[in-house]
Image 1 (cartoon, rainbow, N blue to C red):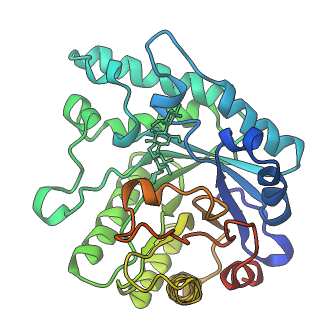
Image 2 (cartoon, helix red, strand yellow):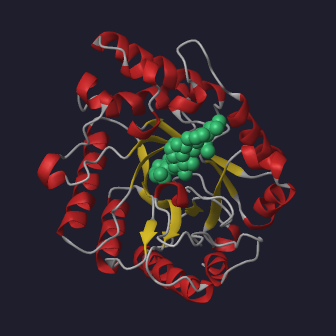
Length: 327
Ligand code: G3I
């Protein structure tokens, strides 16, 4: 398909974001991945600050390990991400010359892309470049790369990946594209504009990644999602789900009620996207409730555990895993 995913029996390919750290500490981890998922999403290992923490230090081993794990086991892998405000090493932000910043960006992208050339089905080349509220302070987010290089750092990053690994499908990734309300309609509009601008600039953009960090209590705009998907399709661009998980700060502390709330919001989200057509892949952001970023950033008031993912802490399938596999 357009983004390189091979669906099983005409079904959506199911990806899982994994972290190399847990392979040694938890013997069930790798097996659970292989039992349930088709595609490896390295959660952090390919990010700028992780793989290139200092100017003259590269840390390829954790990423190599995940890519090798995927290859050995006949799974696909995707790349995430070269340009992201959330993974900037200090040494880069200390650079104050525009020219130097540009060459650092290009060299970084070339080196990382080249190392995994031909092995990653696609790259989330840039991540989260839309301003939180594009009506107020947008359309683009204020980042180091925007301040130094202007909006052209975006096509520059895509050109660099395309030149270095022509087989990698180019994807642009962002969050908060699924909700009801003017703000989110505007965010979808800005994403469509970015896609058209990239296309006008001769960039073969293949996919938009909708992260899908779903907050229980918010309302999914199913019609808005369907229209967004239709519009992307018309532009020849696929919509993929790249970081699905459920953030529940409010429904209950009863696991059964939390899992029902999760099922229902995931269903609304997928219904909206699938209403236009089946996406090529759905990637969940973690594989088991045991390991998730959410409590670090948003602990529940009473300290009770989050249940964001389709496998429980003990690797049992939830109903929404069954739903994902049937899609
Ligand atoms: O690896 C170090 C470890 O050596 C150190 O002891 C420990 C102490 O803090 O930190 C470890 O690094 C952490 C890393 O995750 C690996 O666990 C970083 O501090 C922590 O900031 C990092 O968080 C990740 C975050 O992105 C920032 O890169 C989360 O796991 C990851 O889930 C999250 O993912 C993002 C997507 O890339 C983009 N969309 C939003 C999503 C959620 O924030």
